[in-house]
Length: 381
Image (cartoon, rainbow, N blue to C red; front, side, top):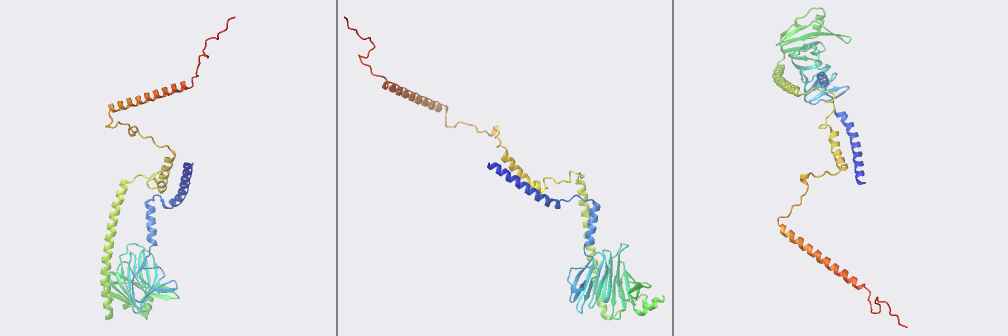
């Protein structure tokens, strides 16, 4: 009875455990994915990652997301449509992942008008910014800084954009070249006009007068490339950004080297896995008992049930106990003991025989001469 109760409880435990484990195991077991599926999932993860990050925030830095202004912080993810503003004691840097970095000086405001993994368009309302952009090899990639009066487009360079309260835009190029175009705005519609290329070590100024002349297709001399002419207080700003560009390039090279090393090691590991891989079949999709948690739990329970139901195994012939005589018990001693036992038994039988005879004599009737068997005497006549 006790064994039946134990077996019933074990079976119930198996049923409940199997039900719960199967439900949880279905969510953890994943079928092998093809390389195309893996690549597409990696691309989706990359697109979901933030494309712009506030990597340095010092002093008065505010970030507008939606309709609210909040204090910015290092590592904050920025989205398309966000606005960043620095105060009189504020400095900020925005890193555009795999594209470049934009540094903001005091009293500067920019908006991320267009932000994708390959495209960055920034609208600079006022203030001073400096951009360091990597070489963009994707035909659809672009990096533009737009101001109230101009648009600066690049595909791998370093340049500064200065906008004053009169909405004059000054573009300064410190590396490679920048395409600059005046912009005419009418009824909220912005139109780009004639474009010029500003080379390294040159600058250009765009204001309302330049825009008016550009509309008449008379490109004024002020739009043509010129040598950089800046107020003396701006020269340290240029030198500071150049030194920071060198640090940025060094970090970018280290990151590129790490990616190359990681790609080479990953390729070697992938080749090794391919050499050791086995073609996938329909049977290989089901988990084996070694890595199946359900089997790992049920197996010991099954063994316990088998032990309860099946009789205990018989010991092998080699394990059967054998009676071996004690070394101190010789054959002579055994014979002597056996003789003594026989004598004792014989004596006991003699005693019993004597006892039976005594009992028999006690029960025998007593006879007299008158009660002899001779016939009675008859008197003669």
